[in-house]
Each structure stands twice: as C-alpha cells, then as structure tokens.
Length: 164
Length: 349
Ligand code: SF4
Image 1 (cartoon, each protein chain N blue to C red):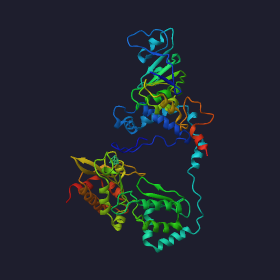
Image 2: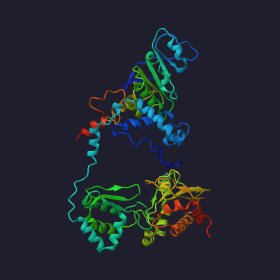
Image 3: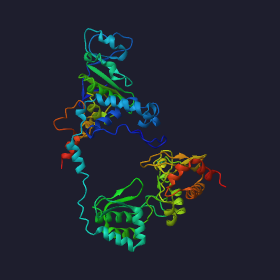
Image 4: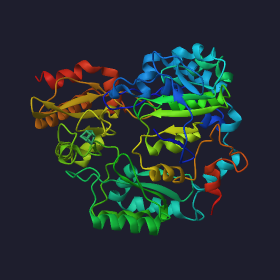
C-alpha cells in the first residue's frame, strides 16, 4: 500500500504487527492493546494504531516514546480522526509522525495535512496525480492549522482579502 | 446551537452570549470537535449537532465545549481586528445622497394615491439612512406560484436595482425580492413600474404571502405537490380587504418531511404526506421563526388537498371570532390553545 507524503509516494519503512506473532525487531506499528508489549521492546522504533473511538489521552504517557501514531478512517464520512490528529498536535504536542489509514478521499488530503497528519496510506491503484493535485487546489483557508507555520503572513483568508 | 427543522424540528439554544469576537473561530472549532467526537455515527438521520445537544442536554454540551475551548491555543485562532475590518469593508454602505425633501415627497405621493399608500404600508421597511426606504417586492400574486417571476419581470427587477437601489437586489428566503436602498422620492416611480409588470401585489406578511417548496412537481423526494395547494389558498384569500382584516399570518408549505418550506416555523404550516398512496396534507399551528421562535404542532390527521384548504378557512374564521384587540393569528392560537382549533377542523358543527 503506497504511502504519501507531501503529495509524493515515499518508501514505507514500517510494518504492522501481525496478530499472534511476536513483534520482533525493527520499526513496528502495534494495535492499542499491544502498546505495553511494544514499549517493552529494547530495539526498533514504535508506532501505534489509535482507533477513532478512543480519546487521544489514552496515549498521553506513551507518546514521548512513540514515533508514529496511526489514525483511522473506517469510512470516509467518519471524520473523528481529524479531531484526534489536531488534539495530538495541539493538546499533547506530539512531534512524531501521524499517519492516516483507511477510507480516505483525495478531497480530504489537504484537510488532513492542516490537522497535523504527515503521511497517508492510499490504495495501490490510486491515481497519484489526483492526490498531488489535491494539495495544490486551494491556497486559502479560513482557519489556522496547528502544525503549519502560518504566523508570519497570518492565515490565508487575510492574504486573500489583502489582494485587491 | 442545535436548532434545525427537517424530521426533528428543534429550536436552537444559546451557549454563550459573551464570547469575544476574536474567539469566534476557536469557539466554533471547539463545538465541532465535541460533535465530531461524540455525534451519532450509527444512523445518518441522527448524525446532527441538534441530536447530540438533545442527548447530552445544553449544560453538558456547553461544559464539553468549554473544556475543549480552554485547552486550545487561542492565540493561534484569534481573529485579528484587521481581518474583521477588512471583511466589514466589503459590506460597506453605499454613498447615500442627502435627504433633501425626499420624505416630504413620499408623504405627498401617499396622500394622493391610496393604492400606493396601501402598498407602502405592507411592502416597505424603514431605512437607517434618512430619505431612503427598503422595498419588499412580492412574488405572490393572487393565485400565483410563490416566488415565480417571468424573464421579463426579472429583467425589470434588474433594471430597477440598477436605477434605484445601487445595483443591489436580494432574493429572500420568503421567496420575495428586496430592493435595499430606494430613495423615498423615487418610490412612487418604482411602484408604478412594478405594478405595470404585475409585481405590485401589496400582501407582504399576509396570508397569501405563502412560502412553498418545489414539491412533487419538481422534487424527487416529495410526497405531495406543494404548489397547487399554495395557489388554491392564494385564490381563496385573494380579497385584499379580507387579507388586511386577517393581518400578519405566515403560511409555509413543504412537500415532505425534509421541511425545505420551513412549515414548522410558520404560524400555519402545511406538510405533504403520503396517505396510502394518495397525496395528503397535515396542518401544524403555532410555529414562528422570529424572535418568539417556536415549533408548530401537528393539529391532527392529514387531509386531501381541497379539505385542507377548507380547513384553513375554518381556522381563519375561528381566529377572526376569537381574537382580542390587535392579536395576530399566532397570538390568538397561543392564548386560546389547540383544542378549539382542532374542533373547528375535525368536528365541524
Ligand atoms: S420539502 Fe421535500 S418535497 Fe419539498 S423541496 Fe424539500 S425535499 Fe423536496
């Protein structure tokens, strides 16, 4: 499954833990109920899947030791993960990677990034040009993003209004 | 917060009345986050903020919003005064001319022309700039289709907007058209040109100023046609003297439970339903979308189109008998209560 960052496919160095198998070494993403098992490992970086029904506060203790949090979209119109990503960045000040997984549409790509998501898992037959284009379509926004540094110019709407 | 019509009509509640302007975006964001986290996902008809507010109660909903709000980095969301000023500048007032003798000219025009005077009384609003007035053009001629205008009429409206109202014209949710800034000494001319084109109906806010959704004639979701019953009611009450006697009365008609015609927010609402494969209409009474907002209550079982029109007549007759000094239909209904109105429709003497 290709992984997109900034509109481009990147190499995915992470693997998901397989149910019933040991976690092993290397970079691995575990389900929430194997978090302590993952934290107990001595080598390799750790990621966790956060179900969209959980409050981000369940990761509060573990967060400094996590390199990746995967937020999930079981269906495109269940957008709870948007708020989770924002809360991870804004309230818990998480600086690792946030990855989005599940049923995601290109139209949502820019919003994901504005909410603090860095990488998106897209299906193997996705048209990459469409995803790339989705990032460039809009140059203004009415709300500030918790992750993008938009302070110097203020946020987009003001730029828009300033244009004669 | 949490208001809406459709299948679950609810009057919104107030969360705060002291929110600083600069915190507006942050607060709305907090509201959306609470809804996003806790709103219903199991049933698309219940995936609404209003449903969550009802389920949690206003106080608990407010508490959760506040909790999120205080945790946010508000400086990031602050709306800068310069931004507000830039937006305001886009809604600036036009360059009004000095008042001159405009008011005196209007007073004289009204004195000389009774028909004009009657139209001014129903179809205009005061304007904050001296010498100006705001005009509501009724698209509700007797027996007509609410909100319809011909291509020629639209051309005229556009011309009038250009000539008399700074090029500005607004289509309202009540299916009429507003010319926002007309000089009082030009109002008589505007009225004459409107009247010549059949746009001078003096019935704004009267019983024939009906709002109707497209209904089964145009809408794939409809249970019943909204337009024909609107036309029948408009014809039934076409007499202007009668309309003035009845006074302010809002009738809204929706062709199905989606409530695009806002029937719940009407003094007298009409809802199209499907009764064993036949078009039928339910009447709701006592709704208002104004400062005294309320949801209309269903009067009783649905009736066929003509029966419904007759039922409305009987409701109006009862109101005219029972009303006390200066009461609108809505006021009388609220004072007298449902029972009498129900009797007059379902147990005719
Ligand atoms: S209320 Fe129903 S019939 Fe009328 S426009 Fe809306 S969906 Fe269509």
